[in-house]
Length: 246
Ligand SMILES: [Zn+2]
Ligand SMILES: [Zn+2]
Image 1: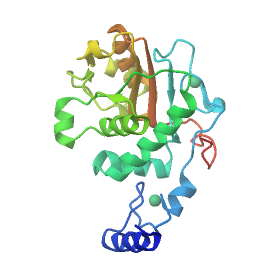
Image 2 (image 1 turned 45 degrees about the vertical axis):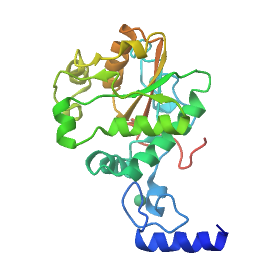
Image 3 (image 1 turned 90 degrees about the vertical axis):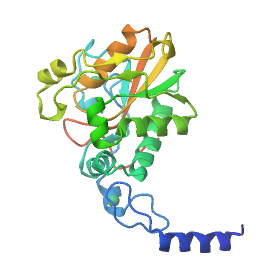
Image 4 (image 1 turned 30 degrees about the vertical axis):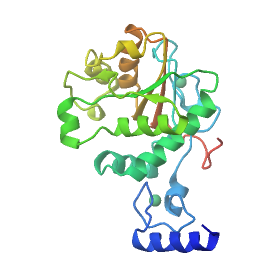
């Protein structure tokens, strides 16, 4: 197809199915990937970051031995624009939000985990009732997108959550740790034995969910667990800089 025909086709497609910002839903011009407002509000987490919890180094308050996963990283601080994107991902099943976050997560994995040989990608599970209610699990969409971008194997059935618990966001740090205790199981230990597992989720707040999932994966024989989330809650809520350094 010539470039002119291609441009005409793109313009026609854009007129029929206007592209929208994956984070807020505003209409985009053909050249934009996210809208100007979200681009101004997004806060990228750039180096130097904590080699354990993934926060910018000036913002880290994690303690040695606090987490049993080896590392956790995220492309974005959980601020306004990213929060709106996560909301679209979680409650509207917006494929564009999942693709946007998954591709950015994959970029951070390449930047931070290049020394590791990742064998398999998986996600934090939801209890069956919650998944039925929502119709899908947003973490699975992210894990599948990350695996596709990195050409890695994905299996979203490795972890299951047979026990129903309270939602984490209204709880204190201590309550969060207690609330996730013993609620996850490994359904496919054969897929993770002596393997390096990349565990995906949407947001890391205190890390208690990822930590509990990592704990059961390690107990079931995984060699190590690396985590990646779309967003990381940062104390200062500033994360790093306005531009990604990937
Ligand atoms: Zn936007
Ligand atoms: Zn830290």
